[in-house]
Image (cartoon, rainbow, N blue to C red; front, top):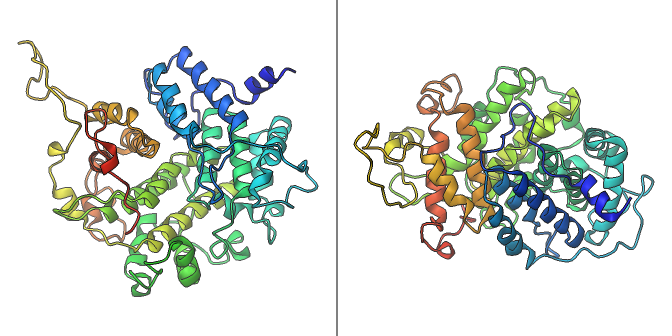
Length: 460
């Protein structure tokens, strides 16, 4: 098989997402743009490392390309997006050691072995399939022996291993799934205090009726997990500090939540949870919205839960959901466990939400609603995000748009049964509200606002 044929096998044109709650392709994707995105993904696969520096900062090139493609961008946008990231990537050099099934645990966490791990996981996926490899190398007992701990690595690094593998699962791209497993293997396990051996056995019976937002509500009421207590606010590693200071205490709350029951219902719980942690934590009446860089990754990673869940057997499906909940709530506590003012948040007029600046056309006399010429605010929000140089904005707006499609018609009171104070005021406009606030915080670049003055909040 030629190199070109091999690359086309491991990175074909992206498939339409098939998992039950995964986002579909937006109108605009074409055969031409599918071929171009595949070509650029192959180039990234061959040329670049999964980290672009020694600190382990992640290569987001594939994420940007696939999010833009899935939202229906023009083919002409893809190469500029590639070039934006390619200029600062680190080249993928040859590995000094062949990674095999006998020695794959020997070089974990060592960045120089990325090419070897990538080649190993590619071969395993081609031989055994994406699902079997995910189970064997991340969720199995063997993959979580002391010092191996692949499950913890999967949720570490600001959830990037899960995000990267998730792109491979969503779009049926074996090469990206292999990149995600290689990234997992090279990521330091930051979750050791969360995912102890007892986590994998769930010794404490959980309450199948307890909503994920109720777990957050109980954590909000615990004075020992508040600002300055749950984690050191001056730490440069607040997630790890939350585990070190409060891991045992947090685990008592995580064990109360059950992943059993309808996956659709549990998925929805987690979507409301991460949207609340990102959105309500960053919002205060009459203040600028704080679009937090860390909690935004909880939203963007949640988009791949369904695509990954579909690949796993039932026991590992439960571990995935429990691991995600624990990771999300620990990041929230690590970043100050800011409280929520939900009633005030929803008191803002949804019809007065900020959308990108625009000039209205002059409608014909028989236009149906001349007072509202921009009927769907999502079109303008996503169009603006597609042209923004920060791929994180595009990814979170894609997430919110999908959640609005799934849950946007939910009425006030849909979460009244939870223990979260003022939860009865939450409705399906949450996702549009957060997309509007996030777009404004990051600047409407397509419409002329400079992006350099609009940075993600990293300090609360």
